[in-house]
Image (tube, rainbow, N blue to C red; front, top):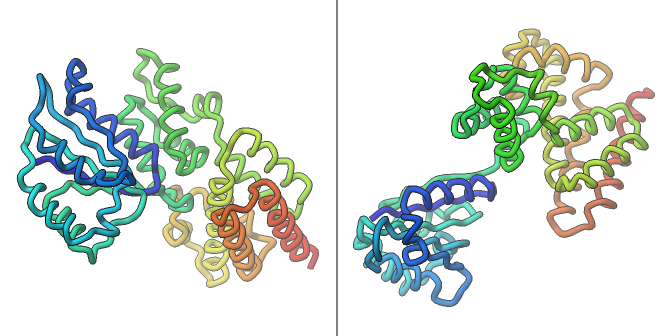
Length: 331
């Protein structure tokens, strides 16, 4: 009874995991008979998925039933719970039932506890952009799956350039794999710099421009990012990560910390050598000044999530940030 629950806000990573499951379970010649993709929003969609999972395989390979946007870990009637209790233990080994959801399962629900008993539950959440150690590990993991050999420095650079954009990470690594061809020498930072266009890096330049109080140049960078179809929320996520890192570094320095490894650990910086450059970047500011930027960025993020118009909302808050930091620089 292979049962899976994939959840999280990293849609692309979930799509990759589903694709891998399809390739493992289904025989290409019989997939049209043995594969069902069912919306969890449909009336009785869950019941239909359970019925399909109990259906014997037709021909070769296995059966895969995918219930998209399932809500059973957030709301589950007694009747549906009873049906789950009856069906999940009885699903044949030749059938694979997959449930996906963006929301974290509610651990208090009986339906969630039931899935914890029978299902392989995997989280696919976007890594916060300030958790550089985890981003570097993600780069290494995906590079291994794609078949790209990276130097440690190249992995760090890709993490800085691409942030938590897993879709672009897969695409850029595939590009690097094709470029390298049959040459098995590790790809270094020179090749990454030459071939990879990192929107996250442009967002970091945006943060640096804002910190210099240059509103006009910052607005130009925003316009360029939007023209490249960079989502506004992703731009904000990178800004939050950068200003948060600056604030933590400055807090540690003001507290008298001089050990770069200790500062890197506190700020979740994968490469302690970055601390040397971060020291220079925060030299003109106090921790209070840098911390004052975070509520502005939080307001920006909340407005965007509520459906505010992205370009004008970004422009307004970035001007506010630039003016805030420009005043601080003049004192």
